[in-house]
Length: 433
Image (cartoon, rainbow, N blue to C red; front, side):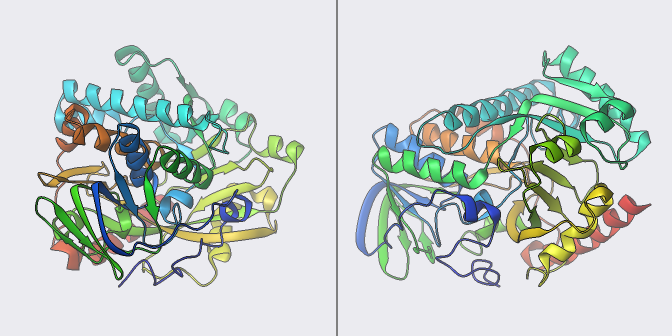
């Protein structure tokens, strides 16, 4: 199944609030004929656009190939939350790779948020970074663990931006009866993800990168140089950066065995106004809860509640995305029962067995960076910078990320989806009990 076409029409942005509100870019041409370059970047999301920008700033001749429009995939559709840390918490990482390596991964994650903040401050990027992410516990028994983790980060990692919240304080920040406590992390934040992607495209082209849209790579031939083939072009490149994430398809089977596409869904309500926004989430923070099928939500700059969640057991989006997401929205905020929903959209992201990103040298001159597992706004953006420095001969951060083991999905590509469905059904049931 081609995930580029099963739910979307190539060349169009999804019917999201972000696409409705964005400052659009003119269409980039499709790649045609014989093209040579220093680096070919496949994928016009955060990873690819960031790689193209950072490589072009280093003086490389860069060609970026996007199958649809820049930012039209997961990078321009997600919840916009810019989380601190890696997708796994530090105690889990310490058990997985050891304390020294876990510390290096923590430092890299902090650098990813710093990079998003810096990019958002540039004139080419029409988006504001808003500080603050609340992690809300939907079970009372989770609250002590949340407090202990905040203390661990404070005492062992010197991170003073996070603190614990009891039930009363959390309810004062998030006006919902669903939560028992949690943490607030002021080093994290939220941003309009499509505007961030479009801003990266402006930065990349301003630095000299050549961007081609409607240029799906059908074949990648390893070699020096490598060769990439689209329906209208043949590209010869000394290096290749793959930033396809959930849309990789069968282009590189060894990566597809470790990174699986899944869907998630988001809705936008009608504008609720600044006073009602403050009654629902005080302080304009983003929120993510402790369910396995996470509910995540924040407000847009024009005071719409952007609410993401609900599980999906097939690759086709539901016919009524708004109806599917309305149920958890109204469970979390019963005071919004019947609120008008103006936009509902789905997107495809890439996950791994460990929920950690998968960095791999597919060949000596081909890098793949993907599998951000819902934690990609910051990490995918930094991944592009890491790809650029790796090609330039500075591979330390790439090697740290690549050292995290990424097991193949059991049963290979054919069985990964049925097994995920079983897992999601089990964890969804556990969330409800």
